Length: 408
Ligand code: SF4
Image 1 (tube, protein in one colour):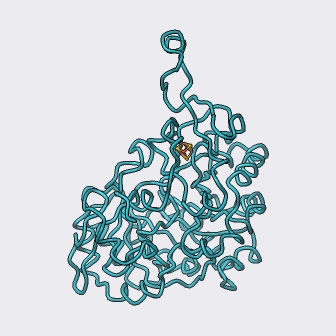
Image 2: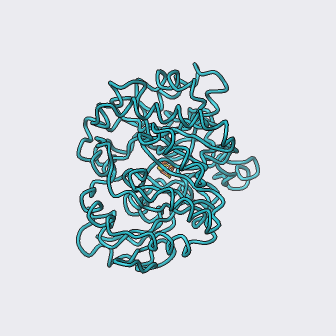
Image 3: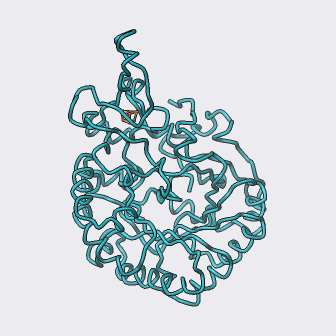
């Protein structure tokens, strides 16, 4: 049954909705990741092949005053028009232009240079292990690790000519590579990565099908990153961000390590609805508004619907009644339904406001001093006790979330 979508994130945490556009331009991918969230790849291939340059121009024109456009979906570098689209975005006045990529085509230095010359200033490269054995097994594409690392090395080389270039990695944390995070950071050290983004695998798309093989317990992930935090040099630690766990679960981690996924909106071509699992007629049942506006852009062969990431979160994620008392509730998008169906709620304990002295004497119940101080309660009370910091409110938080959510 459709639920009424709501903006589930506090703009102070995820950024203002409208500041970031994800533009889907990749009809195909040269990897075949076990955990890919885009499980409707064949449909997207058929439809996105009909996208025209004028469609892209119209989407860019329809998007002011977005501060950044990020080219996403499947593998954007396989679209031969990508350099032209980057130039279009610059001409349209976007101050920042990024791409989320597996980095394989960046192994060709002239191509990588062409993207940067066109105006690309931020590259997020998906890489999921410290070696070919780990990475290629997850991408199910032999040779992918070698090419991706060559791509990263080329970006490092090109920084001499493009000093403002930002290079981040995105590592999809799952059962198969959780134990290799430390080795990964060591392997990447020579490449001078700006931000190491670690996204905990989201049990949607293919990852939902392979839940038992891939999806780790949140508490196991936090255990590993807490251990890691105690071993990393300060210069490495400040560049490590763990995303996609709710703040109640990450209270034990250093504040700087607790990142968040930025809010964004995308244009979905008719037929590429990212929410097929909700069934026929589902999209028709969604009320139009800030999060969802149908047929916003008329393309040459299709129309495009504006979809916000918040919409997906509000539909795919759930909270329990106790979450209402949690200091993080306004900014927390909740937990993916399948995860709690399988593992329950014990790992996610509401962080309650700490009562101030006046509140205690007056009412004995306390008021909310804000999310920077909290205590845990609930079924596993005490297990996550300690200071709980607001997620991602510090300077230097990831400039982009690496999760290619369903709208992407
Ligand atoms: S208790 Fe609920 S609202 Fe609070 S952080 Fe956890 S999942 Fe989010």
